Amino acid sequence: MSLSEFLQMSGYGAYVWSCYGLTLAVLIGIEWAGRRRLREELTRATRRAQMAEGRS
Amino acid sequence: MTSEARITGEEPKSGTRWLWFFKLASPPHAYRLAGLLRPWFFWPAVALMLIAAYGGLLLAPPDYQQKDAFRIIYVHAPAAALSLMVYVVMAVSAAIGVIWRIKLAHAVAASCAPIGTWFTVLTLATGSIYGKPMWGTWWEWDPRLTSELIMLFLYLGYMALRASFDDTQRADRASAILAIVGVVNVPIVKYSVVWWNSLHQGPSISKLDAPSIDSSMLWPLLIMMLAFVLYFIAVLCNRVRSEILKRERNTAWLTERLVRS
Image (cartoon, rainbow over all chains, first blue to last red; front, side, top):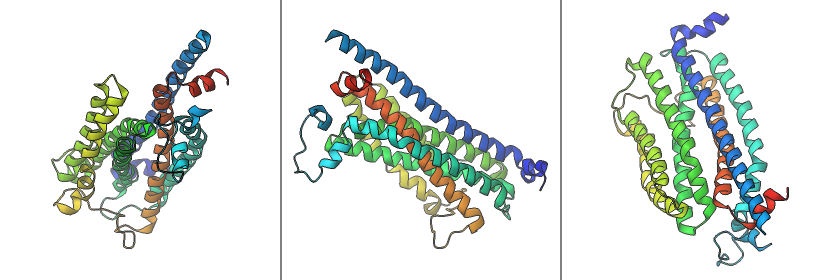
């Protein structure tokens, strides 16, 4: 099987590859959003903790 | 340190049998554990996805009817399975949170919603793209498709309801009711293709003793499903940690951990 045959997917290439592309995008997207959220909360919580330490 | 064993502000009543559980469910333990376990879910998930994609795209033979278009099933079916599984995890966590008043359970439920939403969107999108060449239409008001769309509205409704409360505890309780009631839609989606005459094809693997799919096509699907489950848990770990950070503000253990390390 050649590479162009593989990419063509017996004529369904546009459908198959768009599905795999979307899946990859969603998987990367949820991971990225989760990491960003954690980083934000960590920054916020650290700042608050430092302020609490400064008061006491 | 007393705050380490505190979960709900009161000591567990039913003897010491469940003490390990309460200890595990305490925010400091859960926070640390989620961070420790995450890589052990994330990297195996990525490795299994690559193996499954290789098996599904290159090793599996083309379907006799659907030709190579059937390879969409390797991303569509796991996404669909996860859209249901994540909802069940969310509803069960919400129920545990309401019944036993475990804060961590509410944090897990709240963390599930955005992940489940994206799996549902992915299911509908890939299903639509799969449907066009197979059925000649992007969308049909078919039982399976319609009930999956309701799944999306349940996730969105859950998140909208949460967002409408300023108080986290009230948001937890109100959204838990919605999550628990909405769980009836899960079997409706799952068995819609069996109960009603649907355009959607029937299950391929639900009967493992006699699957309606050849083993060369089946194993990449099973591996991909496992990979999606592990990936979900990995993403969930980060989300739960974020929720704990948000909910545990001004607690001694968190200040201790963040300032002195």
